[in-house]
Image (cartoon, rainbow, N blue to C red):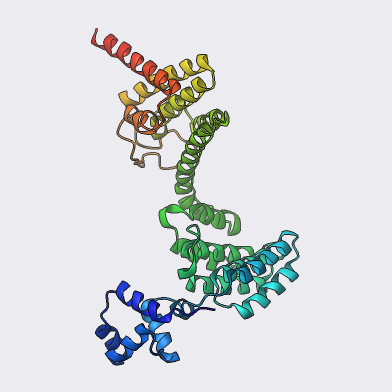
Length: 368
């Protein structure tokens, strides 16, 4: 075990922009006492350790700089996970409780232990396991300053707690958490599910279905777009099927192919990107067909642009305006999403040349 109290007090004081005099005043001690703490000549008494931790918004363990051999905790976690993998909840939980007695304030151990009880709750609808899981999740939130995983934060942990409540039928408590943390509609799909499936309240569910669908369209589009780049950079032909699937998904959303909506601003870019990958892998005829289709769709959108969700399935307020960062027109989106992003290659240069030729051809026809 190592204790780094003196250096932690000094660094946390500076982080909070406090002088030694200000810290001394806040704690009701002398400046000399603070000086001795920071130089390692003495240590604060237990009461003051707790006040320091509260002032600096860290746990006492973190303030002390208490560390244990990481292997001890990691080995225990791996043992717990191995039991969980075969659904041996009793042994997993027994191992968890034994580890928690020794390391009660280790974030990762507390977080994984909470998931152990959550798994038992999910499998058995076990209220006792749910309460234990949520108590551990709450404790994990208090230890988040130890966390190094960017995908775990207070909101994600609270949502896991809401899931626990949903499983055991405590919908009101689940709703309270989900509504409070519905930042950028991240919980709208879960709220829709609670109201529609759990509570049988379709009108309330409808309030969340639309924003959830709009959010889902954005997430699916960004994910498939990113996947196509990732596969292409690895010379994996799956980059083509990723975009074919995305284009098919967007087409399936439309109730009327002739109605222009916000998604039509993006489809030309996905077709152009598809053309580049097809050219890259030798599907030259398909590539030429798709860049021509992309151009015609882009011109159609730019002639009568629409920034709403008109003509899309599941959208009850189609006139709601959508915003993005790719430019006003489909052609500007093309530059932002495709030609400015794809690494220069024979394939990308050929498709860009075909695009420019189409632009020159139809522009001259318009002038004539």
